[in-house]
Length: 303
Image (cartoon, rainbow, N blue to C red):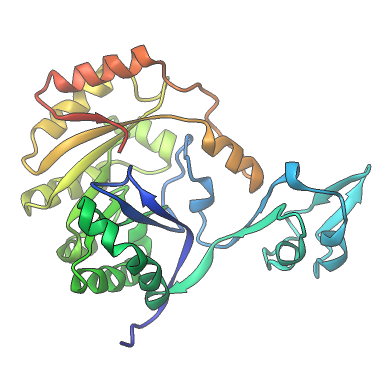
């Protein structure tokens, strides 16, 4: 087997039960064309490796200062400070940190390398009806690598799912759909101006591609991230329900209540986190679920 090229990932989670049916291995691709205010994986947005800091683990040994080849780490007022403008995420400080207080997020992998990890859990996939889910970021930013990986999984009779923003060239998403057994398709906001404001892109292509996949008879689970103050208003919920209920291939809509995990991760990689709201209350989640169910939709909370 000689599979061309590699891809950039930032995480692999085994025994996942929230990214499609059964027990799954979820592989997170790096890079995303959206910049959602509430992103729970802000380390996924850039295609480049990034330095993640864990200040609570730091033991103050100053090894990072000594080994940094770019002089990006220094001691200021008895605190270890990293100048991210100088840092090139080379990984030297992370490799030498005795307390694991520094980590490089993002690495290049081959299809063969990922297959070795995936095949470790084939027994669990078979017993649970699970398989492999490719998430991100946006997996289709690396569509050739994605297609190669999914082809190899299909040849091994491993179920394949892809979690996508839908902001993808239509020809590409239809081409790669031949080796995707389930789409986990994000729907965030139906109003285009609000979508642009909160995610950085229009939703026109996203809605178009969902209709194309639906017309092609692809298996789809819609995913709705519930973000208080941004998309939890009745008008948006009803418009989302109207749109999804008009599609024949969407089997369910998964409501994903916002959580604050992304805020802490953004701080660790030195990024500004724009959303400052709270997690939705049980009452808000229940209201949204009831509204969606009122349109005849099968609704789940979580993936």
